Image (cartoon, rainbow, N blue to C red):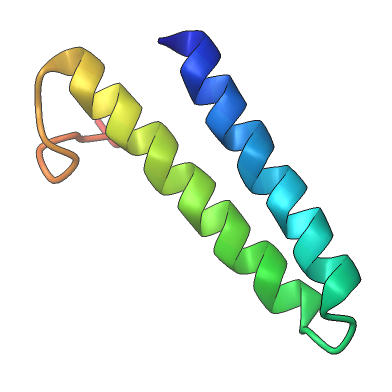
Length: 62
């Protein structure tokens, strides 16, 4: 499963690179913010799944 997660993250990052190359007018700061948001949500979803809870039930702050 870890290999699939890493491959997906790498694909997302490579896709962002291509997006930036072929869309020179795109706001790179906004693109970066969206990418980070998506990666964080993916990590939280994986963490929640490993604990057998939903993301909403996952508490990161004690």
